[in-house]
Amino acid sequence: MAQVERERPCPRPERPRRLESLSQLAGAVAHDYNNLLAVILNYTAFVAEEIADAEREDPDRWLPVARDVAQIERAAHRAIALTHRLLAFGRQEVVHPEVLDLNRVVAGVRALLTRAIGERVRLTTAPAEGLWLVKADPGQLEQVLVNLAVNARDAMPSGGTLTISTGNRVAGDADPVPPGRYVLLRVSDTGVGMRPEVVSRAFEPFYTTKPRGEGTGLGLATVHGIVAQAGGHTRIASMPGQGSTVSVLIPAADEEPEPGAEAPEPGADA
Image (cartoon, rainbow, N blue to C red; front, side):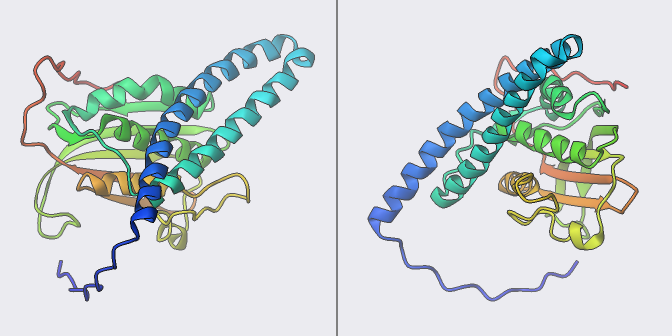
């Protein structure tokens, strides 16, 4: 595919030292704050699950508590949106790339994904055997999976199936990435799907089709940014009424994992 050469913008003047220091502080604080929020959300999900069981036996006692927990979760999600803005301002999305097996990342986050998507959505995984290794931040890959799973859940309000699969892919000249070896991650849902004009804007920061106050528009934008930072590419295929598939290409690693790394677990589950 021929690429159109774009005019290079003039370099921006350096920001004043005081503003640069402020941006570094904002980025550092936001990164630590984001880690704390992830812990809060995880434990909030555990509490909500226990309360849901108790609520069925004594709704009068536990329904108000369930509502309070839901408010905590909403507040934490709003705080996460704020940290992403601070990280963008500080340009300090701290990453710690490692050579790793994407199948193992998927397996490790499966329990969290199951909690995140709820009982109405069935999660299936199809890890490819002999999957090539990638070099990426494992925490960021987990964030990609969680964001895509939550986005898929919201597209299936009446329930459905979420499928996560992996595979090896050799990209050629016609692909939207430089030729070479890539690991493919696909996340598919059986949801309502998206119109073409929505697909074209899906990765834009703060773009959302949800009612005001129910979506930050940062989920898919964050996925796109993480994958791009790893040298990969993200694509959405979707049609109204036919569900959606997000395909992620991540460059395969030429390095070997650190000594002591566990072997991948091939196979598929239903």
